[in-house]
View (cartoon, rainbow, N blue to C red):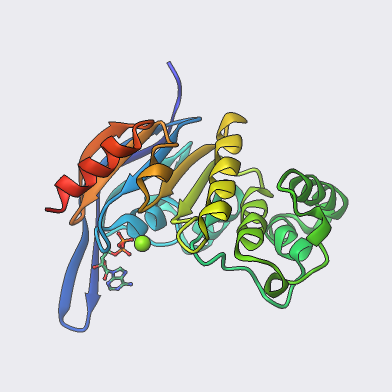
Length: 244
Ligand code: ADP
Ligand code: MG
């Protein structure tokens, strides 16, 4: 029996904009096993990013519970959540979200310095190893705007991994990349998973989703289906059937 890393029960998220109330998640329950690679697919606006944000402690649910390892997110304060995010979660976003006036190396090292600034030497060693592993060590002294999109996403992955997170959350990580750079990023995620990293990723692309062990489908705030990875055309067909 493998350990359950993420346990979600009855998760709801209600957004209120003025008088308009919108239920983005309508009661999602889900378990993720440690070491698993799970992809989430669904149409735009179905609640994919909301789900990732709640699991990563970037936002708080309106109802329901999120447990990551021994951490119950629903009982945490804002400061507790910030610390939880920094130490246990790695985020990768579609638009990289790097800090433009910091070098590549400084971008990667920042979350580690925020977590423990006394450990500078060990942090520099870790960032060097990560940049090397991701093939961008020679870019370490450049700034994000000097790099291609694919290189920037590698930097973002290195930054996400620097604190050795228990869970990597990737929100359309290839959505803003050309297909070759996208493939590279997917290869890197495969490698991370092979090294034991648990991954939960959102994608619009059935080929990308097929890299995962499990593909979950979300529609209008409900989890509505589940397929094994592997078969990209089967996944594409399932998604097409879901939205017609
Ligand atoms: P997806 O990532 O699947 O495209 P999201 O989780 O981003 O969907 O959004 C789900 C729904 O919730 C969308 O209809 C979106 O407009 C709405 N929504 C997301 N964030 C907010 C917010 N901060 N305030 C109001 N509505 C939001
Ligand atoms: Mg989204």
